[in-house]
Image (tube, rainbow, N blue to C red; front, side, top):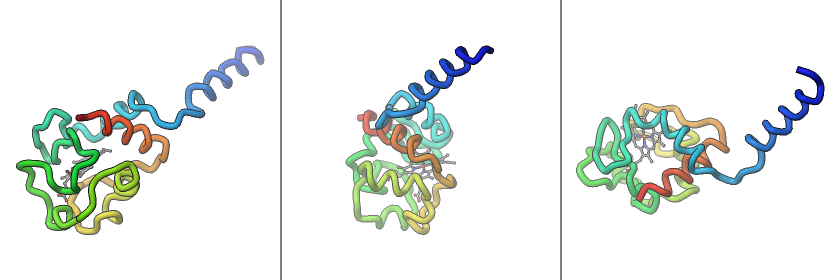
Length: 120
Ligand code: HEC
């Protein structure tokens, strides 16, 4: 690769990874690590379905047996509460039993939440 090609590749990378606020398509890829437990079609698995989760009260999806900690959390899921939860689930809602340590990357969380918000 010569120097011009190298710098063109660098520019392409910057454009691809750089300045987007949130991207539901990218969020769908991040969501791949959630699908082992969470459906988007309204059926419960190891975790509650995340269909319509944004705007719903925490721990209230029909037919899922939540932990006491999650059931007794009084707020609803929005971009801010999801961002806090998905950063560090155990710290955000102590005693919840989601066996998942979180998504460390802030951009990945923003994309993921944009995707979740589309699941009506
Ligand atoms: C290994 C299984 C597993 C994985 C992987 C997992 N979760 Fe969960 N999730 C759960 C369980 C179980 C609960 C319910 C916890 C409770 O009742 O304390 C839960 C709860 C949730 C809730 C609260 C839902 C509600 O109805 O209030 C959200 C939001 C959530 N998970 C998002 C995610 C996202 C996004 C990912 C991927 C980044 C993910 N989870 C990965 C098992 C999982």
